Image (cartoon, rainbow, N blue to C red):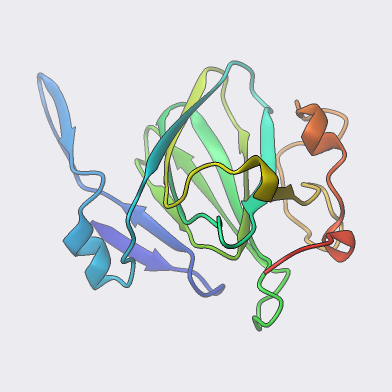
Length: 183
């Protein structure tokens, strides 16, 4: 596995090796000991699988509050996304900064998003499937979000509020400065 860090501490781009032949391919997408050596020592409790039929489907920016905060390992098995992680750790020197990466079935990259980050993605192709592992169970009581198009975050999304396909919940998320609870 190739593991790269970003300027925002904690987020990593992980690209597993893929071995192919005439039959197809094989890839080890998660290896506890390899990721522990890279500083990712977690226990996953749930896998999530999201399908987006249309290009420009935007999900996020989401997070869960402690004690139900989640680390996430995100990958794409069909299609492509722009995946974004925003630092919402109030005491972090990179508070409010973000990282973005294109994850696709072709590039086979994964994004590691630790606790203390809001996460979201936008589909770049129709019929996109995203699979991600999380370290705590979904908790509606602790579920929070931030507006994807908050101008202070300056995320270069491939869509704007008029063209993005958003859930009703994501249409009314607060700006970062107005979020009542963060890390």
